[in-house]
Image (cartoon, rainbow, N blue to C red; front, top):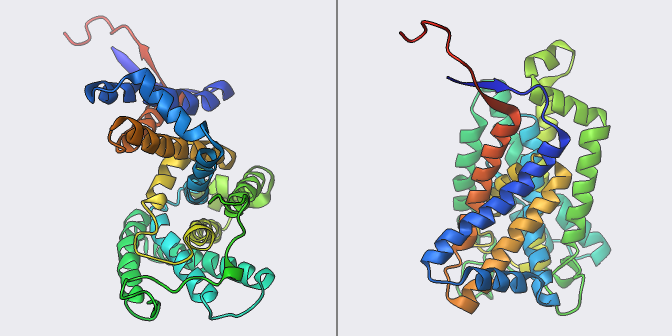
Length: 358
């Protein structure tokens, strides 16, 4: 007979090693569809590596792709730590982008040191509101936040399309559904000349560091973790569970909104309905791969961004489908889930009692 037993406490080596092993296994499994596609596996991975580290431009493109993933990964990781299942980071990203455009495209004419903080502030506030609504519905009426946050994504996208055909439509856009451009002084400064990587990446790193410190070293982080471990016990200990839920919801939504700000004010300059290729949903994978650790989110986001950028380069060089990147990310998540189960439980073989099963 086989019995599944919970482990007392997984070792630190196992906790840190599972995400790394999951990434390695996912890359190894990706060799199977590569082989079926007729590509040389060694050459394919060599092209992927060159597409990430082969030039300064390639490396900075990876950092650019990682920036919104860090924000959405942090949004998911913090919310999930409190067992608040935020599946709406995609919609909150668009809310942040809309607010950034509404403020930065001419509504406020101010120098950069004033306009940039305003763009960030309004973008984060819009994302926070997008997560506050499902949290209120959960705490007051018991609504499942998985359903409400997921469905709000579609509501926000429809609202975005309406705004791009109405109040936010660029009169100089030749009829295309896009917003007016953000003023030059409202754009996040680039980190390198003639490269697309911008200061949003630095903001993302700072946000991850602050989140890690707050989660591990602050009273707020202790309450968040206590609510996530056992909300009933936390309430019995005097922690205001609903207040803690709302606080982490606001932070989570603000981080997702900042992802939208970084894309529209740091990279593209204007808003369209296809601003995000799914950064909000990929952020969930980033958070899970990081074990819900804010510091791990940075590493996880860099890995997934590397996979996407490297797969694009490999696709161009070898004629292999770029959807391989989605396959690697999906397999990484599956491997993380299997590894997480292995870390929490162990499978033991027990001898059946005499006469049992007779």
